[in-house]
Length: 202
Picture 1 (cartoon, rainbow, N blue to C red):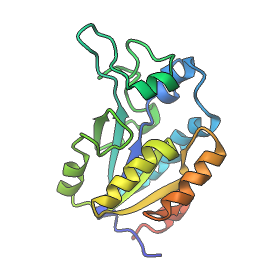
Picture 2: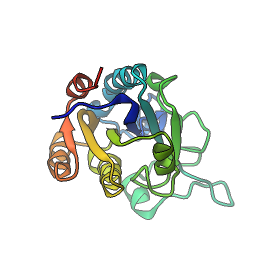
Picture 3: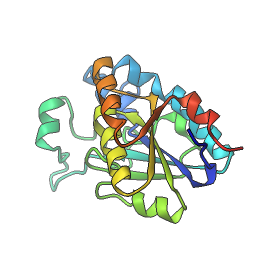
């Protein structure tokens, strides 16, 4: 496999947010945080730090629930069915819950607020990456079979070279994670965090 030029490489971190992962966040309150997801910030932050140290770019997506005219979150029907515990204030724009986890503090160059699975859908991510001269998109975060998969496929459709960090993302179950990674091999390279760091051109 070829090496990555850090100057044309972006790590795109999907939804590592307090309401998804932090104690007391929305998903913690609903009992919907997997141990695999909780382990991700400590695993992904060193990758972001190393890439930035070599001149690379780090972007993050932040899932956002916008309020309606009455201040209630506008939740898609499928999400409301899956996560009935979501309530007013969860993932609210600019809130502590919507924010990136603390492990990413000082590492993210640009955050985009998203309302669906893909970090490209109705956001400015593609514009930002192209302005930054990015050719390689490396995806990590949650969940493997949701936001990670959708973002990787959208990046592929936009002619980026796409990689997914196998141990830098997680799904609700290991079986779902493995199945999603197997499927993603048709559009992306799948490698570990250490393999990616080892392929950064010096």
